[in-house]
Image 1: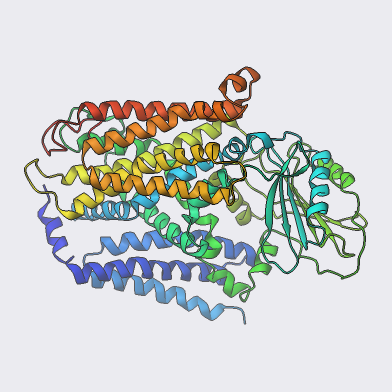
Image 2: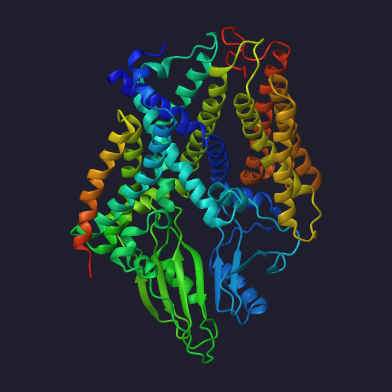
Length: 99
Length: 515
């Protein structure tokens, strides 16, 4: 029943790759979620309580999105690369933090 | 390519659902019970119910607080409502951080001593703390909820024919097919509920899970954020100068004039007896969907109104709606029942998912069942039937433990966990259909006999409650009967098939009832 395409994809899912994906999903997902909450708090042109609340609400959706991406990516390396790009972009919002 | 993507999502759905599955089942079931947390609390203390929530009740509570905790740094009175008809008192002794609490006995006007219990609070707190130290329990439940959110989304992606499968139920089909259909039906039927309850559940503890934006914007001052978001007045400082407390009744009357429909739910008094005392009246939240914090702040010595708080900013209101949906405190009985049924559907969705994992992998009768499969089977039975047994046992303990027993609430909880542990042991020793049939039978007995136990131990049994139109007590007893009946039917069907081999891959034994 399992298609050849799926089996080919699963070949990259031996333990090291799988473990790496789980770390990327659980910790990377949390990190991206946290960065989203920070970026919203810093960047949104709203009263700060509103911006903080919106950031918190969106962070969980971002977390879920990251987990889906990590397990849909073709290889573990691609999964990590896909985390790094938005992660760096979000982290850049730190520059706008209040001092 | 497309095909592979869906297969990946199916894999993710399986494991993101299975690994936290048993915890999720418990969170769902105890959370569903917590929809009737006030009613459970009242059923477990049937003699302490109180309907009055006007100024007289407030005065009764105040007088008792003055008697038992005159030097407390804070008092809190929770007034009764029709679905949570208990007058709760909280006080913080000097030098302590936490409040102590008690429930007022309307017959004596004193904090009740006999029949202490956690009541509905136990299921409510278990639902997000698992009876662990709060930090650990909340993080663990949060991780499981996140996993649930992922499992739901990946499940939707996996499920291409989401609409067509809604009308598919193949009880006669071989193997795990009928379990798959039941799982799909339960999932799709209440899909908006499942998504909503999981996401809003994460939001209820979001300040703990995702504090980073707040940390940055408020430089770590969480109190400042809460004060701003909810527009709460900063707590007063004591003047350390004695001054008598003003009369409470006119303040409550003023609040009732402003909130004629919702009434007053909470009365907080900071530093009673001090010149800087403040009195805060909190509005009831049972008449609208959103939970919106509204408070009137009075001077504790002059009774002068200082502040009317509340924040209607859009994002904060959105969270208020999310909390309103999650807690379902609104007083609309029909909608409340729908939430309860949806909660049961969610519980059953997790349960059928767990059982399906086993049914899919069940070897032929002659093959050996490997350790992982037996472990999952044991955990499945001990959780899916064991937890209801433990919950019903909690109610039995509430009725049968002596009223003045020391640490009575702890004993109720010990019995709950002892029964649950027993169910896991039984599941390990009696694998297969017979084990399921036996546990269903025990749950059926516990549920069906509970109204009889209630009749033997209290004056609030069905024979009294039904003629009096007391739907709270009668509803709880009828609910126990209903669950008992459902378990009895399950036990009968499981028993009939108990002699057949357990779960063969091709055999038709699984059917709609098979394990």
